[in-house]
Structures are given as C-alpha cells and as structure tokens.
Image (cartoon, rainbow, N blue to C red; front, side, top):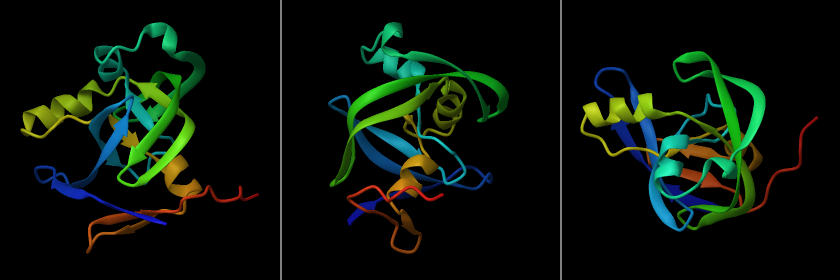
Length: 148
C-alpha cells in the first residue's frame, strides 16, 4: 500500500479539484484526480510539446464524453510507466484528448497547468482510498482481480 499526498484546489466558487504530482516520460507534472472519469486521460498538446509525435498515438473509434463535450475523438498512448509519489505501475495505456480547455481555465485562475486526469481505471484497479481530511490517496501495489 502506498500513501500519496495531494492538494485540494478551490476552483472559484465552482467546487474543488484534487491535484497530485505525477511523473511520466522522465518529467514531473500535475494531474487532477477525478472519480467520475472512467479512464485516465492525458492532454495531447502537452504530450506533443514535450516531444511525442502524432505517430506515438493510436487512433480509436471511441468518442469520449464529458470534459465539456459529447463527441471528442480519443486516441490511446502506451506508456512504459507512471509514478505518483512512491507508487508506480508499468506498461499502462491511457486515453489522449485535447484538454486545453481545462488548462485555459487553470491559467485564468493563476493555477499550474495539468497534464491530465487520473481516472477510475487506475482508482478502481488499485483499490483507491481518498482521505480528504489527511489529503492523501491510498493505492495498493498490486492490481485487484477483475470483478465480474
């Protein structure tokens, strides 16, 4: 079990976001924890700006909903690893979308940009426990067995 600290950000009368530090592709970023997101998503523009190429992404026929749209075509990206504090996993596939609207809003509020959204795929598979009082996310080392 790993305990990862997080920060709670007040989003100008719109509620709160949980933001964690994440390391991927040999660099550190901020990521929003979103229990309502079914899949972990990374921002395509950020990935392209740090050196990935269009051909690194795999096109899908999946249309993503949420994030202010009902029909956003998604792509997939295979990563060798991601780390949140002392917790890490290898060989993970994440969705890739244009999250510029989120970063535009963050910039408008003088907040640090985020690389994406940590979603239910990781949270469920690794038995996430969110403790708002202690501002920690607890994740198991091993993936839980799939439920039927």
